[in-house]
Image (cartoon, rainbow, N blue to C red):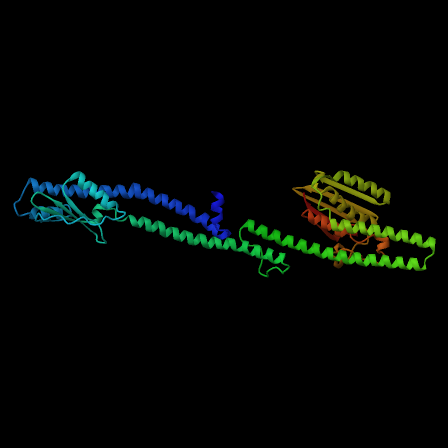
Length: 439
């Protein structure tokens, strides 16, 4: 049944939202209207019809118990002044033929039932039409009693006001709901349009920005961040391919020169060195392209890693000071996070003699600060060092210092964890690297 219904239900969110709003309102109003009609409207109409029928029965009793001859002036006066009924005494002509019954009329059914119960004489009833007057004719022994009564005396005529108010307020509420839903769904449609444009390689709409409810704003902000990350990743991969082609072309050129000019022993040693350099570069390229994205999240022991850094500093003859506050266990991708810290601290070991690492894990955030006393990096070039294959120093060529991907890999890993790396001046006179990760 649900599958059949889903086949005919609208597919758009706006239409479905309107159904969610309108359907309960219509159901509620239908129940209220039915209960009101069944309990209030019908009950009031029955009581009013009973009262009018009693008045007519009383007039008949007056006519038959105290016959005034041919002068019915007192009865007519009493009916008009006391009972608010206009009566006429007609000759005993046949009653008119019954008229068509209304399809839905509480008054007709209630009044007919009461006349049959209280008077139990032949009668003719006319409640049809837009007139505010009800006509009742009762056949007596030698005369016919015609009674005119106001419709409001036998019928709860003000009930339509309730229906008008109910429908009117519903229309007002629906208008407000439709306007509100339109404003809430518009940001979702804009987000879908921006995502579709991005999928087709088109620029983002200029007027797109997170709007609407908090959840929609979060989705819009997440989409913008995702787009920036994908664009940055594409840019980095493009730069990587450019660097790969350039660096491998350089080594292949050296191969040709060594094969053409070098002696056998010297040429073999140079070729071995170039092969080692090429292998190192390719490993760096693969690590950069892979980005450790397939690794599952696990527990990383920060204290154990800092102890390893102490041993590495001793082997490199560097002075290292470490400080850890908070829980040493963090939930990250262990291998990727270890590579991140190794790249950042390794750069500090390479260009500085004294390094200080401060780690703070508190309130769902991990903050790691790496200070050194090295030469530092000029402020205008700090963003460039995170680009693949960027080397700021002439001495940092591929023979001496790898592929230039260390900080690029480190920032990619940090951002894949929802954090980032920032560079600034260190109080020790060198460079400060600030790693902030939600953990």
